[in-house]
Image (cartoon, rainbow, N blue to C red):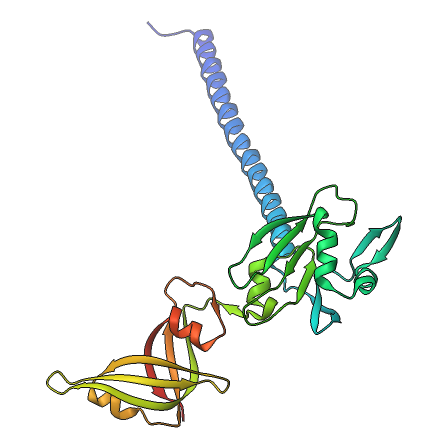
Length: 269
């Protein structure tokens, strides 16, 4: 039996409604995904923008200002033009406060109640401070490095947004740290002493005195005859080092030889 036209029209309408519903449903999913994707992208861009702002504050090239000298001790401002202190009911500059005492140790002793010690280095006594929250002396959040190194550096660094590690890498307290994983330095070999010669195994045990123009240090090396013959006294050589873990090294010849691995020596002239 054939279906009537009315029955066929009813079936066609139902099919049309189902297909329309499916299309609307799929469009809704697609639209939802698009909106969600744009929202996530906006949030991600906002987060990256915020992260960039935070990074820019601390990772920009620091501005270090030679502020004043007190009895051969330097005071530097770090990422700030001036430091204001509240003293006896009035605002004065840090320079004015220092001039009252002409003694940086006395100044720091007077300010200790407004500071927290955050780190003390085993380099002779360098101390890192931060201003306490809600203190009544400083008008902003500051970090202070009071240098006291075995080399005799007693400078003072005070400033905002101070990454102390970066400060030391850039020369604070005379440290001049670096953390290159591979590097070379040119030194002069002043003296070569053959401590032992193992001809059978082609090994030379050497005690080498190296000079950087300011001071000398002695290193011990084991070389074959070919390498030994390259070395001459009072000649400059390029010394190649590796610093496997990128540890901080002071720009000091003895520290470099003690902490980095010497991988090769070659004539530099």
